[in-house]
Length: 337
Image (tube, rainbow, N blue to C red):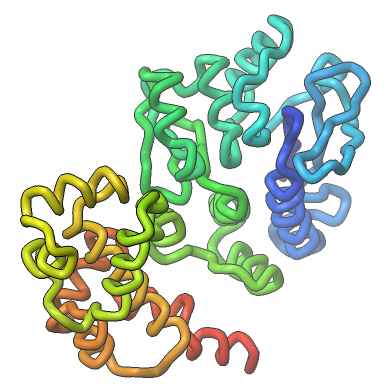
């Protein structure tokens, strides 16, 4: 087995965890595999090169840390097995040099696989490597990726995706998910599971990034009376909350109320109520051991099945799956282990 050379390209200002999350994942895997039947002792499974796009080797980090790269891209030698690009929100519009973009394209063409973490997808897209491909990025920037690069088939829900040898992942810790998938691809699920256990993370995270990105997305109302209404809604989720009932509470006609509400909150009344109910249910699933029927009634869903459909529609997971991941039972199990 040949040592797999991983080149971690760091475009400044880079999110440091996007670099070290995958790097640590591969490093743990390398130590687990080294000396086993999967790898002879004189050939470590992975080796790394941290690559900078500039010849001073200094890469600014989002938190203010400075990383010192092993090599500038012009100095990288030998075959590259995995080319992994990392960046940060402030590097989405990174200009770079023509030589850097050409190196990225040529190196990707020679590498066994190419990938990106979070907004590193913007770097791959700008180089043309995502054209016509399905790709993921952080949920907060999926619309920007689609707008800036209309030729990319942006996947708004997946933690990571692969399309013809090019891998892209969602936000921050999803880089670890992607690295685990690559470890599984290289050495099997058993090794990847051992790495995940050491890192205390999921080998396969349930659901997609919707469950982590969906909150009450409505804008803050400018009117104090509508701010008070939002509080009243949350306090009365167990009751019917139709447009007619809400309009009556505000002493307005239903049509006028719906128009003003949408202008104030950036959401229809029905959507706001549904999101409020989901958020309340999420809190109860996380912090209590109450039954599903009880939570559904308390949050105004009417039945467990209605709540289940709402969770699947909005979060992509069932209430049971959500509780298994974030609830007190899962935290107690982690503590016990």
